Image 1 (cartoon, rainbow, N blue to C red):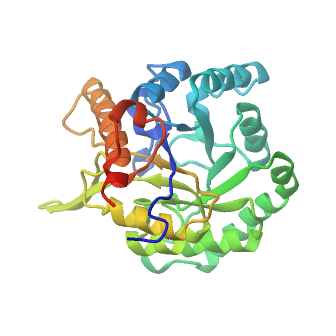
Image 2 (image 1 turned 90 degrees about the vertical axis):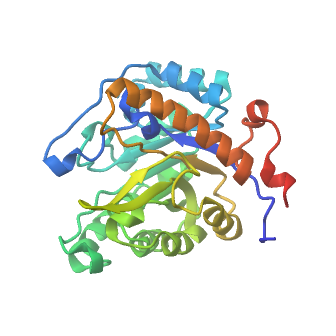
Length: 323
């Protein structure tokens, strides 16, 4: 049995999981040199209702999910909706999102917004640019210049972070190697500042999944838990998102690492799925997202022992029964 086998986590969902319904953010369109926004067909209240229905403990949201309305009255209303439903909130922001600038915010303002929403964590995508030959560009001079500037943005806001007691998580968001995130965390050297490990994003910088998770786990305050199917066809090699447990990622092995190595500050595992849309209508895609969400929550609870609220819906967890 692994060390900390019985360590428990809340289960959360990155709202990007339902991006075809207009939640989270729109992603990937930067390859076409354009911004994009899927139509938002539901409200923040609807998102919270879905969270309750499928058994989530936490929603990991973006500014898009609250319609980019950061007035005190609207933030208070959203906080009330979540609290009354028993759903905790985390905030996800970017500095310079290449596809959907609606999610952008600076450190200071994001901390104020998160505080008013009742969040205890803010996750940051830094949107660092690497040289085109990215496979060997970790900690390259042009990257370090950007990281030093980003360090300054966080460093000057450490007093506010302390005032709010807000955990900070810096993500390997398709733009940072594990060692670059770790460099930032170590330089900031503050107990409230940690990392967010996305278990698939490492592929974008051609970094191995297991290696990335092992490196980042000791610094993680946040995890975007993903699964993908990797395959080759005559058009090349592809990586497509699946429901958690349905792809090629050894999800149990990932959780073993996190249970053994992650600090106590990691108390939530946020699932994130990105199902392929090609070949389906937008309406079919939305239904597939909801189906994938339900399947993911059930799998993560029953097979990986993640979550509290799922027990009300899915019964006993096989993970704790089969030690």
